[in-house]
Image (cartoon, rainbow, N blue to C red):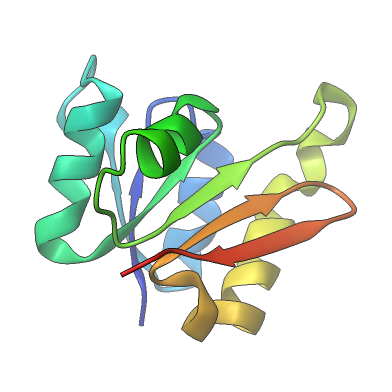
Length: 119
């Protein structure tokens, strides 16, 4: 079963939804508020946690700066569709769990793109 590290930018409803479904989710806002994005990736790696974030800087860190990661789920949901967010992420994890590790996944209300990371 995948384990997650939720960046401070991740809507906490996602954390609650995944936890309610039995997933192990550590939330940076609870354990290390103010942590830099680079440090979030470092914290996730030893426990093979997939990072949950709404911060587009993680794309730069993973692809341009080539930080090693166990995976990233980048959430892009507009304000008017936020109520759908926890269910959408849970559906994604349940349907694609085996593909999410070692991938950079972009999730929107109407689209999911999963890109396997090199290495």
